[in-house]
Amino acid sequence: MNSKNKTIAANNACLLVIDVQLDFCPGGALAVEQGDLVVHPINQLIKRAENSVLTQDWHPKDHSSFASSHAEKQPFSVIEMPYGKQTLWPDHCIQNSVGAEFHPELNSQAAQTIIRKGFRSEIDSYSAFFENDGRTVTGLDGWLRAKNIQTLYLAGLATDYCVAYSALDAARLDFDVHVVLPACRAIDLDGSLAHQLEAMQQSGITLLEKIPE
Ligand code: VGL
Ligand code: ZN
Image (cartoon, rainbow, N blue to C red; front, side):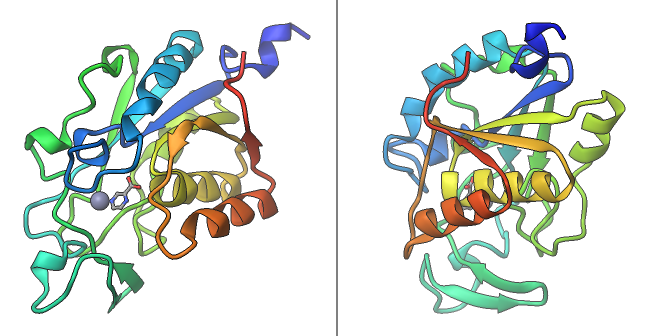
């Protein structure tokens, strides 16, 4: 077996770069602490990866995940939606706004595909595969399967929301999933980081403590 077969450079592997957008970086509307520090390690990964996909949180301005879309609701409170519980967020990643842009130093040109998610006002989408109803697909699974991809490396923002939901769906879809922790940063709301790290481990996802070769 070629030694490349088990690395991020293999042609059956793909890097998923989750939501490296200005609103999730310091100074942004839903800033993740040190969110900008993921950019350089991710650029290294993009350079090595044979396949890479970026995701972009892409909300209409009246999106139902925004606290501002609900009377008397505060950001970070939780409401019941037809599809289950939904955390309400400050307005972020509004379509065509500066905050929705990729970090300017992210090597976004090198990626083959961009998956936009959360663009239906009535439903949020943390995962790169399914929206928060657990059924509406983004099309990413079909794209990966058409290219015979079996192994995924995930990095980006935020570890405990969009990265974790994407990784957990990918494991359910039977991909071999690796999360590159030094290239991720978390929101960590009410213990969400510990909870999601545990859930990922339970699902057989590999949590990498170092940038893979
Ligand atoms: C995200 C909360 C709301 C994320 C997106 O990218 O992790 N989190 N929208
Ligand atoms: Zn969002």
